[in-house]
Length: 193
Image 1 (tube, rainbow, N blue to C red):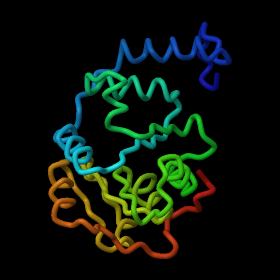
Image 2 (spheres, rainbow, N blue to C red; image 1 turned 60 degrees about the vertical axis):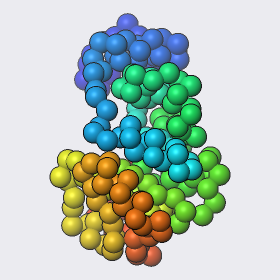
Image 3 (tube, rainbow, N blue to C red; image 1 turned 60 degrees about the horizontal axis):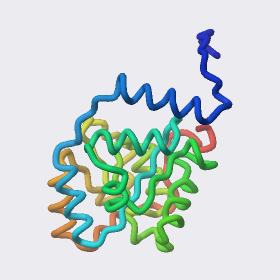
């Protein structure tokens, strides 16, 4: 609407929206899994990690699930064998970097102590600083080379470019706990998002 584009989709009809999103997936979505991710997921599953996907998205949970299973060439059952939760911001009241988004995800998987949770994300602000503000243990997946000076406030932050590096760190460091300051500096006030 903002761009003056007219569509023949009734966006108030969830069935039409889902069909539209499925068509987007079929026509335009051709990702490949990140190097090492499948091996890492096997490692995490074998070692008793509880895994969740927490995503900022305008799309539905169904679309996000379909995007993941299409990327990995999985069934929905296989996805569920790895992940305990898929939570998308489009269907909850919060989005990253709001620490309540992370807290809600932890609550939904039964994690009552944020220091028991490791959050892996690529965005310095939305993922790393957001999860740190929720007192989780962030890891920065820095495949984009997008580290910022704001990450320096988290002492001992683990940054990696290949999931084999993360797996190795977790094998050698069973108690990964970066030092999180009491207040996280985002550069702008979180409420401005």
